[in-house]
Structure formats: C-alpha cells, structure tokens
Length: 273
Length: 311
Image (cartoon, rainbow over all chains, first blue to last red; front, side):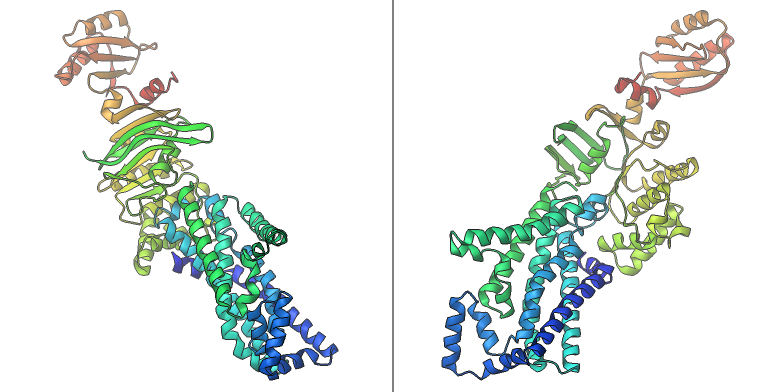
C-alpha cells in the first residue's frame, strides 16, 4: 500500500503544485532578503560572518542576552557558530508557515476523499486499515519531503551559481536542515492525515485542519500569559529550534508525529467506511 | 454444510434509525446465497457489515468460524462489489484493477494478466485502456464485478450486480456468477426475483431490517408439497375439475386462480409427489384442460410478497 500510494503521490500534480508554490515563496523571501542586504550595504551578510569570529566570552554574553529575550538558545548558538546563516534562518522561518499549509493542501483529502467516494470499500477489502493509513502517511510524507528537498536544492544551486550571500556555509548547513525538515514534514503530514480520517467530506478535513493549526497556536499563546510553560506545548512553538536540531525539539516533533499517527489509527479502526 | 459466514444477533443503528435489527443468519459454505428484500430492508447494510466496512452496533460476525474484530475487515477471505462505491475516475480501467490486485499482494505481471482476464470475463476487454470516468454506469458496475474476480478469496459478495445492466449483459453475468459458484461461496442481492430464483441455492428475505425467511431455495418456495399447474386456456368446467382433484388421494387442497387458467395444488406429503402430479394432470386433461407447465412450490416473487406484506 505504501509503495503504491507513494508512487501515485510523487507522480501527481500535487507534488508539482507543492514544489512550485514553495519555490515561489521561499525564493521570494530569499530574494527579498538579498535585496534588503543590498540596501543595508551588506550588513546582514557581514553579520553572519562576523558572529563566527566572536570570542567564547562574547558568544556566551550574546547568548545570555538573546535567550533572556525569548530566542531559543540552540538557535542563537547555531546562528553564532555559523551553522544557521541568517538567510537560511529567514527562509526557514517563512517555511514554518508555508510548508504546513502546503502539506495540508496536498494531503487533506487523501483519506477523507476515499471515504467520501467509498473507494475505501474497494481498498479495505484487500489491505488492513493500519497498512492503508501508513501507506497514506508515507506517500504524503515522501511528496512533501521530496518537494522541500527539490526547492532547497534549486535555491542553494542558484545561490552558489550567482555566489550570493554566504552560500558555502548554507551548503554545509543543508544536511542538518533536511534532517529537521524530515521530522517537520512528518509531524504535519500525520496532523493532516488525522483530520483526513476524521471526516468523510474533504472540505471539512481542510477547514478544520487549517482552523486547528491557528486555534491551537492562538490558544497556547494566550494561555502562556497565565502559565508560561503552556506556550511551549504545541508543535508550532518548537519549529525554529528544530532547524538547530535541538534534542528537545526533535523529541517534541517525534512525539507529535507518533501521537497523530496513533490517533488516526484509532479513528480509522473505530469509524465506518 | 459448514457456515462460511454467520451473523449472530447483529444490529446496526445509524443514529436513531435501526437499519438491521437483531439479525441472525448463516450462509453455508459453497452456497449461492440470495439476500432479498425491498428497498430499505437492510441488504446493503448487511453486506457492508459482512465485508467489515461497518461496525455492528451489537452482535457478532463470524467468517469460517472466526469472529470478526470490529474495524478489521476480513482481508483475504471476502471480496465484495460494494453497491455505491466509486473507483478513481482518472484511473484507466486496467490500471485500476492492477492497482487493486497489487494491494492484495499480487505481483505486477500476474496482476496485469489477472486484470486482463477479469475484464474479458465481464465483457470489457476492449475498454481496458479507457478512463473510469468515461464509462457508463453499467460498465462501471462490470469493472466493479471484475475486481471481485481478482483474488483467491473464498467468499464473494455482490450487492445488486445486475443493477443498471442491459438484459443481455445481465444474462451473461448470471452465467458468470454460476460458474464462479463452482468453487466459491457467493452472496448476492437483486430486485430481479426471477433471476434470484434461478441462480440461488439458498436465500434470506429481509424486511425493515429483520429476517423474515431463511433457508434453501426449495424450502423458501415451499416446494415440499406444493405445485402450480399452468393451463393454456381457462377451464370450461372448473367446479367439476377442482372436485375431481380434491377427490384424489394425497391432495390436501386446491386453489383455482381468478382467471381459471392456473391451479395450486397442496399435497399432504412430499412422498409420491411425482405420482400425485401425474394424477392431477390426468384428471385435468379428463376435464378438457390443456396443460402448459407445472411449477413446484410458489414462485420466489409470491413468497417475497407474502413475507414482506406486499400482497
């Protein structure tokens, strides 16, 4: 099931849609950052280089100052050590909004559409529900992750070709970013499939999926004023830290992925198809 | 015969609507089992329950003696033609069948040849390359039937397989179902009761979610001691003919139809029914009757009407 689903998804228009939209957004953000750097006479790119030349004491001081204002220590450390160049940080920050949205858009009806049209009745007499669900998740994840890799590769290649910004450091940083991206996309894929198993109408899966992301984010943000740790219970509160491969962020994303998968499985087992 | 499928006290509610009500039914292995009922009788729900698509509100379903776990369809045991399920419209017919076959664990080459063979058997070989969206309702139905031919499952469930098919295709499909029955248990439903009577070895009649009748086709039609004589023209002396029949040894009752062109004879025993039939025919001919045919028992349509209160 997983192979058939993956093949169908990777070769679909959805994959192309994902790549094109993400390329336009990430490319646009990158281009905008470069233009800003030009206006600032290269101060941004200089900053990325200069921070790597700081002494240990200076770095410790900056980290203490920055983290006290809310920036995660792992991200600050990665930035100061040159592992997370500022251009990449800005593009990845935009990705935290765009990629989950695209994941939802290309996958919201993978299960709900099958249930709605009752195609599941042809499929589920041949494969078990857990295999069906895992196939959907793997196929959706492959498309999302490969699309992200393709876009990043195009941008890095373009950056290297035109020798803009600190492209060498970006190339060095990419493998770590992709490890983070693998987990980032997996978490949102499983989130999407949970909403897809909940409804037989694809429109409802999409609507509640989008609403869920914003609602949970707004809720945790609001509640954090009353009890600060609640500001860090949602997936979206850890994504920046994930790019620096912060172990806690990795654990949070892995835990959410598992939880969404388990919940989807329970829903699919219990529901009529 | 050992049951291939058993429903034990099955109830299925959709909200406040009870679609199936405490249904207990046994489908013998190797039978061609007809599930009959008017619209809304619960046939499709029963099929979906048997296939594991729906969870029963109450009760147990057993496949070859093993209870089904809710939410775990009997993969590898049952293949079904669901009544209202769609195949992906953008897939090509052959590709859709290969996709389903491969899901069932069949290798690529074998899946392709099985899909080709299945399409030939349902008369759609020349449409193999067409998209599902370009097929008519009847053709899609036949593709749905074709997918039940791909696999080694022992039970095939066909929910109204001939619905929307032209008479010739329906006739061909009837022959196909009979040939499949040689090595499998088949459960089917249809509103064409004549077709069901000819095809099925066993049947159950449902009405408003409840079981009204269940048994072999002979038991349901009451062929034990009942037969109907159809005449080519109305009897000229009906009273005398009926009196002569009633006087025959073993005749329990005689009913003459309103048009005087058919009689229903009930015998007190199933023993010597052939001799009694011959005696009845002789007595009728002695009274100037010309016999067209003799039918054992009631027709399935009559039994259906009686059982569902639609006389």
